Image 1 (cartoon, rainbow, N blue to C red):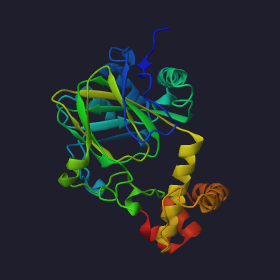
Image 2 (cartoon, rainbow, N blue to C red):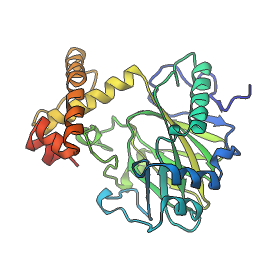
Image 3 (cartoon, helix red, strand yellow):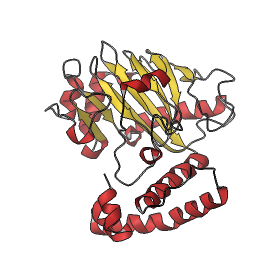
Length: 302
C-alpha cells in the first residue's frame, strides 16, 4: 500500500516532540481537495463548523474580524478573489474525510512505533485561503500535522514556553477563550520559519503559537490533529490553571509539582461533567460559568 504520509526515520523520539519537523505526503492531487468538492463540503457542514472572514492581520482582534459578505460555499468557489481565510472544522464528520484522516494517522503510528498518531480525539480541518491572506497569531491545544495540498505558505512558529512571546496567562485555556494571541513584529527574531508547498507538511507541537502567511496563489491545507493521554492531561491542567488564576491564584507550569498537578487533573475530571450538564441545562456558556464558577469567572471569560 502506498503511504499517504511519510515521516523520516529518526524525526520522532517521544510522543510529545518539543520541536517541529518536516513530513511529506501524497495528497496534493487527491479528489477530496478539489474546490468543487470543498464547496459541497462547506455547504453541508453546520454553521458552527465553519469559520471564514475577510482580510486580517497577524495581530487580529477577534472582536473586529471582518466579514466577506458571502456564504461558505460562495467563499470556496470564489476564493481566488475573495480575500478570505476559511477553515472547515471537524470534517471527519464526512465518512470520506474520516477515512483519509484515519489512514494518515494510522500510517504515522506505524512509522513511529506508535509514538505519533496512535491517536485519541482524532480531528481534521481544511484551510482554504485567498492569495496573500493571513492566519492570525494563535495556538492550538492539540498535536498537529499541517499538510499543504495546493499553493504555498510560510508559518512563523514559536516556543510556547518562551514568556517573551506568550505570557503564562495568555497560554492558558478557558471556556470560550478565543485562540488568537497578542502579536508583535519583534517576535519574528525568535521564530522558526517553515515554508511549505504541495506535498510537504510540518508537525506543529501542542500549544506552540504560530501565524501563517499565504503565498501568491490560492492555498488549501489539510490539518490532522490528535491527543494522547499526556496531551489530554496538559490541556486539563491548562483549564484548571486558568480558572485558579481568575480567582487570584496563578499556578506554576505543568510538571513543577506533579502531585499537585494530579490533584488538579482529578478535580477537572470530576467537575467537568457537572459544568457540561449545567451548560446544557441553561443553554448558554456564560450563564453556565456564572452558575458554576461565579460572576468573577463570567467577567473573565472572553
